Length: 182
Image 1 (spheres, one colour):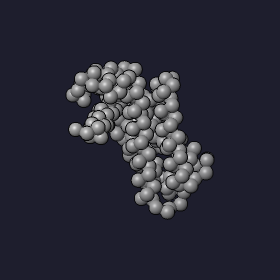
Image 2 (cartoon, helix red, strand yellow; image 1 turned 135 degrees about the horizontal axis):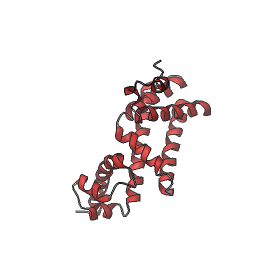
Image 3 (cartoon, rainbow, N blue to C red; image 1 turned 60 degrees about the horizontal axis):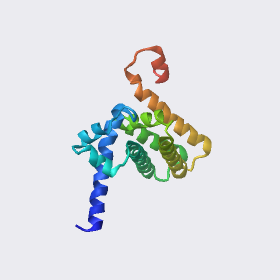
Image 4 (spheres, one colour; image 1 turned 120 degrees about the vertical axis):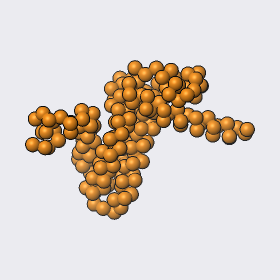
């Protein structure tokens, strides 16, 4: 096996571990997830996880980065489909794609857990980088001015709140106000 093949194989395994770790971290967050749980879910030894990711923090930040890459890719696909539409139509298409994507609780909860653990500088930096990437995509692909990009991000955060709380299943007045169903 050549050095290139060995690197490719290790990189393939790293990506597979990131995928599995994303699901595990989404359930219980950074602090409450032992690497043993990730290794078990991946069907590998904890030692092998640490061979590819020397610390749990490195693995978690890789998972957070992958989460934001996935969101960015989805937003770009939506912008591609919107074509040369006006700014608002492109932002609406990206918002719809984002809303559909966070219906996947793993994507949603990874962001929530990453934000909750942002007192750890490396995690805060991974979240900042991810959000900055999404803002650059929203602005660059739509041509929107700052205020519209801010509203887009606010809409995405609103979608987080509605989805995390399963507001559509709540019959209370506050939930109907939040979802505009009065």
